[in-house]
Amino acid sequence: MSGPTRRLSRWYGEGPLQLIVLLASFTLAGYAGVRLLSGDWLMIAVWFVGAALVHDLLFVPAYALADRVLRAAAERRRNRGELINFVRVPVFLSGMLLLVWFPLITGQVERYESATGLPAGDFLVRWLTVTGLLFAGSALCRILQTRRRARKERPPAVH
Image (cartoon, rainbow, N blue to C red; front, side):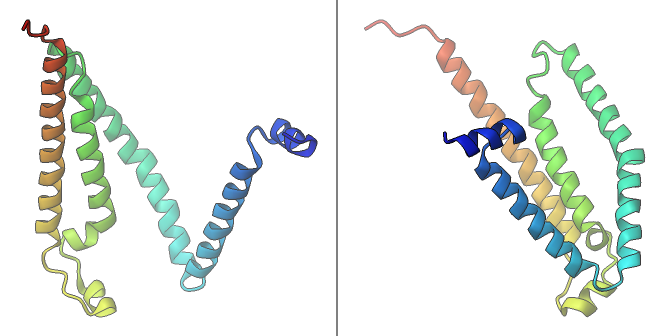
């Protein structure tokens, strides 16, 4: 490492490539923000503040409560929480999809259809299908993990 690079790493805490990528991402986010706020900036700002408040005041306590219930259920079983992530991941991904596509999933499609010209009738069915596939994939991963672990724990065959 050269002198200026070493000084930058000591001052910044990471290498120069990480700083360049970080600055590029902030530049891209700033550009996107300027483009986004060029329309109805007041309502967009209200939406962002409202979304942050709803997340912090409503969703975070709900996450914590669901996690405690899940951990308590896992503690009662012998597996001591091995199943928790096989439930957390599909619930998180399904919840994020619900959050992003909530208006279309609940049938509030007037603005969507007029803005895009595309029909929006089957979003609830699609979300339920994706949620089912996420849980099925998680269950399949759990089954494969259990089989792999059982094979490793089996004593070697004597020939």
